[in-house]
Each structure stands twice: as structure tokens, then as C-alpha cells.
Length: 401
Image 1 (cartoon, helix red, strand yellow):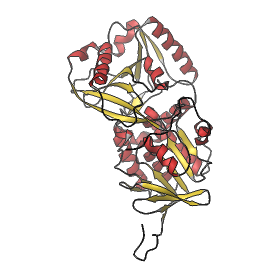
Image 2 (cartoon, helix red, strand yellow):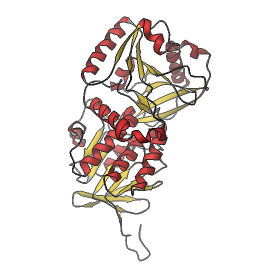
Image 3 (tube, helix red, strand yellow):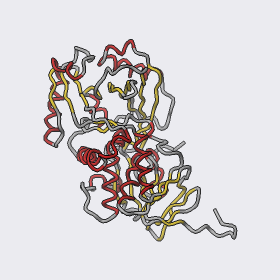
Image 4 (tube, one colour):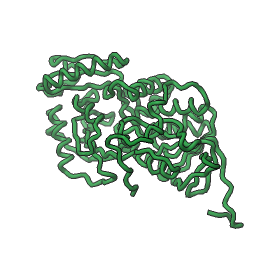
């Protein structure tokens, strides 16, 4: 792109360019702007046009095993409930709690062991014996063996989170540019000094890659490797009903599916109600690139799994389904922090299906690090350069359509 005299246009300047206007990019922009940085958010599409528009908005600790992701989830819970408490109504924050159920005695034993390990890490969890399950969910199948209740689990409306965090970021001085594709990076020597976009260059000492499932492609533009892959998931939506399901309810094997690296289709029952009266039914996970063709057999499997938990659903009509692509990393940890392989480049990606819940913790940590303040968590486990060596199950990112 050149100006009327044939020279390249002068780059606009900012302190931080955020690539991606999804929930992670929005949270990063908000906290960075509140920390005093001049922020410009760019996205090749609309706000929340990717994974953020295709999720259930869960803020979960119940599906996390001990480790860095759980630490980030607990940190993020504090941000949701303390730093952002006054705004909770804007994005329909609902502290509904989660109920995990086991169908067999062996599953009950495994769930009880997981609960003990989680409590040791600071998760609140209540053992629920078989005869007390109806107190939590009267419509549950009487065939279940046991359960565990997690009062910290909550839900938000993710597109409202994106819209309001970016609105508040703009109020703090940020700029947001949709329909603006990043086509390359500006450099001075090895250092990243901004981005080239379809609407002209932007100069900045820091660029944050928050591009969701396309984060690997953005990283490649900068000459570094971040193996983020799309992992497809589908959700069934029922007709509106009176309140029939009080919590997020899922089978204990869901935790194992989340932690699995298997590329093949996995389904486990996850069921929850919404304020509108519809019931959301999941979940599925499979690595099929960006293929959007969902076989009817997959949707049928979701329905069967849900009916096994809640038999009344057999007579309820499903009115639609939708799908999305979770940004998956082979080691199941997000990528958060500065990239020493390309100084000036930062990453906030690879959160897979936990991006909504972990977004605000990620954004606050990055704002702390970018303004040279102590971070609320050690970012070392999330370091981008950990991918210098191949990981088990690692693959080359597929082409973006």
C-alpha cells in the first residue's frame, strides 16, 4: 500500500496492538488500557466472530486437575468475582454451580479421588451421595451412582463479555478496528515493532497474538512456532422450557476428555439450562481441521448422552445446533506471555474450551507483565518458547480457509 506520492504511509503509533477481538483479546485490551497503555485492537472479522461466539460461556474449576491451568482458573475466578464484580450484570454472570455425576461405582470412586485432589488445591467441592442427587437436580436419572457439587462454577454470556469489555476499553482510550486483517509484522532488526494490516501499518513496541484458532498462523507471520490447532465441538439447543435444570451438569468422564490428546471424536454428556429457558447439550471434541460438516450421528450421540442423564429430555424438541473450534495446544496449556524468539511479540492463545473462564485472568496477568509489575501468577508454565522442542501429538497447523 502506498500514498499518493508513491511512498509507504506513515504507521500510526500505539503502545500495544492486540490481534483478535474475541474474549481473550477483549480482556487483554481492557486491562492493558486500564493500566495506562494506548491499545489498538484489530480483527479481520467482527467482534467475537470466532470461538467466542460458539461457546456456552462457562467459568469452570470443576474440570481442572491440579497444575498451572487450575491455578489460572482460580486466579481468574477472583478477577471475575472481585475486579469485575460491579459489571457482572452486563454479561449475565450467574453463579449457578456445577454438578458432576458418576454413573458406576468405579466412576464414583474415581470422582471421589479427584475431589480430594481438587480440594487440596483450593477448589470448593461437596460430595453428593446417590440419595442426595435429587436435592440438586430433581430430574436426574435415578440410575446414577454419586456426584460432586462445585459452587465456584459459573456462567456468562460470552458475546456480551466481549462487547462490554471492549466498550470499557474504548472508554479508557483503546481503539477497536474490525475488518482489519494482519498481513505481516514490522521489524527493527529481530524486534517486532508493529504490524502491517489491510488498512495500513500500526507501529507499537508490543503486539499481542490473541487470534484464537488462527494464532498459529499469526505466529508464523512473525517467524515463530505456536502449535495451536482447531478442535471442533458441537452443541444442541432445545426448545424453551420452564426451569428444569438448575446447574451445569456433566458426567465425570468429561474431565478425562478435556485432558485427552486424541484426535478422534469423543462425546460425553454436558447439560445446562439458560436464562432464556433453552437447554444446551454437549459435548463433543474432535480434530478435523476447520471442517464444518457435522454428521447427524454426532448430534444423535449428544442427544442420547443427555437423555441418559435427564430422561425427560426424550420428549423435548431440539430446535437447532451450532459448532465452534476450540484453540487446542498439544500440552493442554494456554500460551501466555512474551516470546523471546521475536522480542516485542506476546501471546494469549491456546485456551481450548476454557477461554471464556480464563480470559480475564489472562488479561490481568498480561497487563501486569507489560507494565513491569509483579504478576499474580508465574507465567513460566505458559511460556511460548516451550514449543521449541516437539511435543507428543504435536502437528503442523492446518491451512486456514
